[in-house]
Image (cartoon, rainbow, N blue to C red; front, side, top):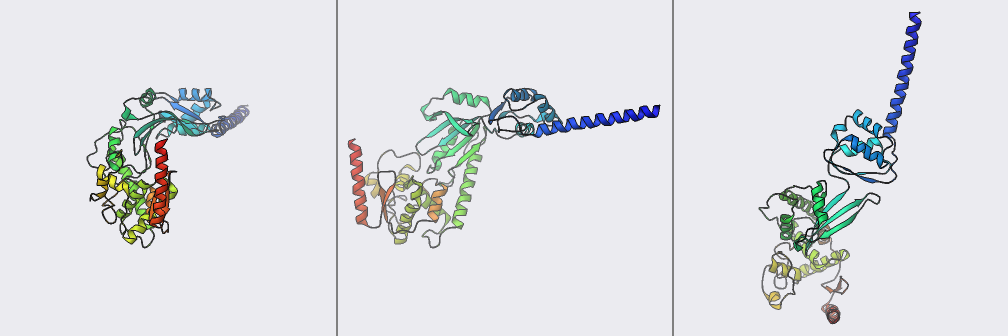
Length: 384
């Protein structure tokens, strides 16, 4: 009899274990299976919250089919205590396992508010943007110029939330002085800037930073990026260029950058400067003369005077031979590439054509005709 009872008990235990194993397996499969979310969403995890509140919010918004199973999976994978504060992008169809990983992985917020600090040639602007999870595109909520003295409430609120992401965007053609002064005014950065980086050696680009980052470290990143771009471009440069060093290539690139805002024109503008250097013709580029006057500290805000065009200074390319002594701004990658890979043309001149671009010429006669057309356009605009 006891033998029969023991056998029955063991059989029952086997069944129970089999059922339990099956339930666990089903739960694991459900935990790792694609979730019910039909459209990507932004999940904000407040500082000090817990996995229960997060799971309930996910269930409420239709991202998980069971908040209980979500918590059990987080506990089983030993991630419940690793919950991070921030705003996280939860993609369409994300499994519970995926979401647990997203909210416990750490790092910068992947959605929500982004503050863009744009350092431009004429002004510095701040934009507050929100990511639309459905399109994965940012929508501007407010844009303002700090120098105007007004700070919108949206910006203050975004700063106070604590999980906003920060991005510093450098426009092509800004000077080092403009960058340094703008970083000094950036209230989300820390530290002093004791030394001005070399002109031209800060790469125009978009840099993600964290609140409290040191200003010097941001500048070091910009300088390292520009050095890498310059090194790569110089290593692959065209043969027989009339420039002998990377520094000269950077100087030439800065002239190209300041002469045209039309990307397609950069290699043509480069060809004009290269042809002039080869022929020993003065470069005669106004931006270099302006830099000699302003030292890169802001914009001139007026036209050049004849006396300034005649005065001999290191940057007056109407008077000096060859390149100025150094860059006049921070050129972007495309301008640097144009400097080492100029178009092959016979162009010696260029002048504005009234469309934002330039008219190029091989002879002085052609150039004078282009200048006459430009003067006519200027006169017509002045009368309107």
